[in-house]
Every structure is written in structure tokens, then in C-alpha cells.
Length: 217
Image (cartoon, rainbow, N blue to C red; front, side, top):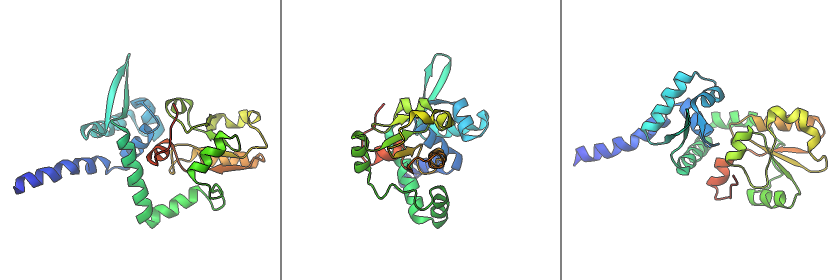
């Protein structure tokens, strides 16, 4: 009986071992945005292709990620949306427990950047009514894979030269990959500098979906 119980716990521990790496957690967050090649993942995580491949192999062995062939390319993706939910829950629990993480997150979104205490449902309603403009500042490929309802794609590296496309009389709500992503923060800083009323939404696609809200693709 003890041998069986040990085996059961060992199997669950495989998930914990796969998650016990900062870079593997970052790769999971990147895969929450959609399918990617190992080259793209390595570039976005700022590691070598060899190291990215090793981390992705660990995620595959734990059945957290899987691959598919597309011509000569191999695309990686999460095994299921539940893996994204696991990442969101794990990160939220860490934020609740760890003061160091709370301090680090506070440095990303300074006081006053909040969306005037609007909840997610209200943001959705206001976006639908055109009362706010939700701006997805991730790469266009990630937007095409999945995005928040009524969101407009404008990658952060194109924002400065495309400011004229944005209405000046509508509040802008920028989001990217989630609370750890810095692209939305940078977009809000630029927009405010140019006179826009801009806010940072810390949610990404994974957080939005984890709260039971709709996603568009």
C-alpha cells in the first residue's frame, strides 16, 4: 500500500518539478499567448535555442506542453487551457503569499495607474459601447491567436509611429501578456506623455479566460 501511495505522490510531483523553474514558467506564460516555434520562444524569453529546447522537453514530459508540425516548423503549444489556468492560479497564490513579489509588481504599475476601480465586466461593457479603447500591445501574431473582446491590435514597437490612428477623446486601456509583462506599462507611459488618458490593465488573455470571461480569436 505504501508503495502505491508513494507512486501516486511521485506522479503529481512531476508537475511540481516541471514548474520549479523560472524560465519554464515564463515559457508557459508565452505559450498562453498562442503557438510558437522554439526560435520565437527562445528570443522572447532571452535564452538560447538549446536551453529553450531543454525546458520545453521538460514541459512535454510533464504533459504540460505538446507540439505539432507545420511544414518544416515545429510549433509548441500548451496541452490544454487548464495549463494556463494553473499558471494564473500559481502566480496569484505567489502574489498573495510573497511580499517580495508584491513589491516587484508595484514597481510595474505605479499608484494611480489603476482603471479607476473598474471591474472586468464593466471594462467589457465600456469597450463594447466605445466608451474606452482596449489596446492589445502584444505582437500581432499573439493578437490573432487570441485577444480580449473589442480589443484593437497595436504592437508596442509600432505605437509611436501610429499614434495618429488613436482617438484623442477616448480613454485607452492597454494590456499585454499579464501582470509580469512590461509592454503595456511602456505603452501607457508613452500615451500619457503624448496627452492621452491611458491606463494599464494587468490582465492578459490567460487571466481574462481564467475568470470565465470571453476571448476572441
